[in-house]
Length: 212
Image (cartoon, rainbow, N blue to C red; front, side, top):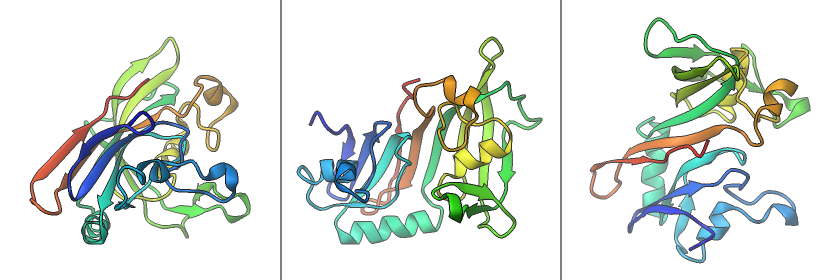
């Protein structure tokens, strides 16, 4: 299957490794019909979407097989029982927090006149991200982070890191000209996925190393 990278498949679920630049589901217009779900359908006709990654983000994506598995996995996401981690490279040298993990707890609201952009706003939805420093590159003035979204808002990681004034490199929506110039793509990758299997109830962990 050259057009899709299947990490794992069984009768209840699929785990895929999405490339950057590919939509998860079809968009509006003929030019936005190529997407991961449409590429999967010819091979797994019962595959159903349970969550998404931004088009510019790469990494692990979970799909359900059949309506029953979709309901179970949707409920697991809603109950925050599916745990995801990401790796990002951000602009600037970000000092490690005093504890290993730090928290960004800022509400996110759709910037309606400038959609699909989001902004930090007291009227927005509660949004929480855990982060820690993996490494620093003083010469290039960048920092590699591990990120764990506690909530699952659209663009959450990108908006929260912009709020720290350390936008993710290559981010065309939330970056600065300097941060955008440092990478040819958004340097954000879904690197770890942990969930309870909907049938066996076993804990499953999947890992994908970032390609940057």
